[in-house]
Amino acid sequence: MDNIINELLPDKLSETGAGLPPGQQNEIFDRDASVYVMPAHFLADSQSSPNAKRFGLLILVGGFFLLAIFSVLAYYFLFKQKSIQSSLPAPAVEESSLTTEPPPAAPAIAPSDQSVPDGILATIGPETLSQEEVVNITEEGATGESTTTAADMATAADDILDADEDGLSDQEEVIFNTNPALSDTDGDAYSDGQEVSNLYNPGGNGKIGENPGLIFYRATSFDYGFFYPGGWELSRIDGDNSLIITAPDKQFLQIVLQPNSGRLAIDEWYRDQFTVDTISADLFYARDGWDGLFLEDKLTLYLTDKNREYLVAIAYNPNNTAHHFKNIYQLAINSFIFGDASGN
Image (cartoon, rainbow, N blue to C red; front, side):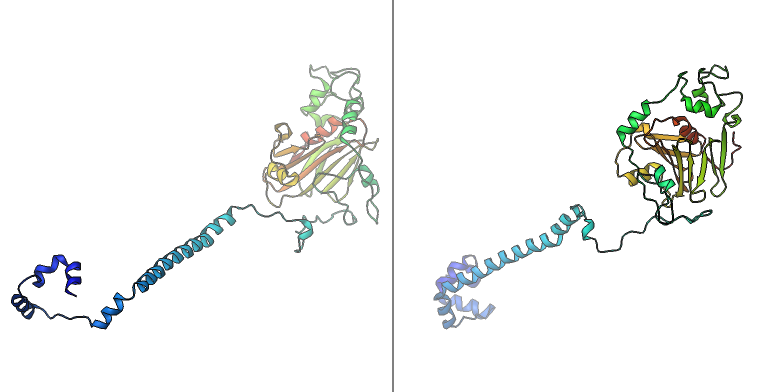
């Protein structure tokens, strides 16, 4: 026992009196401290059980590693998994897997003048009613479909007669009461086509409203208006919400109006409707009071007023024939206004 103490506590020898003669040692212990000695059987157990110490050490080390492993796993599942899930894109939902009710359709516009069968009202979108659909509106509904293709339209656009090359087709010259053999009928140094484009009368003095071949249509329900040929038939399919203006050869213009429920700018609505990211600059078109965007073929324009209350579609359907009335279509667009107008 004395040898163990001497080995473990060499720096304490002087304090306890170890190494002094026996008489002085007893004197120090008697004066300063009470000494307790471990019972011999405990000492014997500790000397005879080195394996127990190793086992205890292994338990401590193993417990430390288990704690470290559980800590890492807890951090991964609580924080890393959440981060990974938040960074993943939302899963695509297939139509066939949907179990909820479909989103509500665009609000229906109640007819004001005529009773129209359900499901055949023209709506603002990628397609408008074809002439065949218009003439087949019956109690059973419309059954016709447009068969116009891009190739048909490209061919038809090139097959336009313009004898005096003033920009107006020969058929349009008849509407405006201008001379198809003279590029400047009224002799004011501006071609007939230029005057129509700028809303001036190509057949005489004044603005386009002075031309006897035109009528200004005023839609009192929604306070909009535009010019169209007086010799064409105007049909109100759903009050002032949907108009068809038909030429004698069955080509026609169509104007459809609906509320802009989302108060969207025209480019926002266009991107959402046609799922496009970029829009070509030459498709944008604006006039006083509204902003618009053409479809690629330039035969349909979508517009919204500056207050974003309404969405309007103005479309030209040549029915697979030559585009004789492109300037009439452009006139309807350029003259289209919201609010008060004199018709000039």
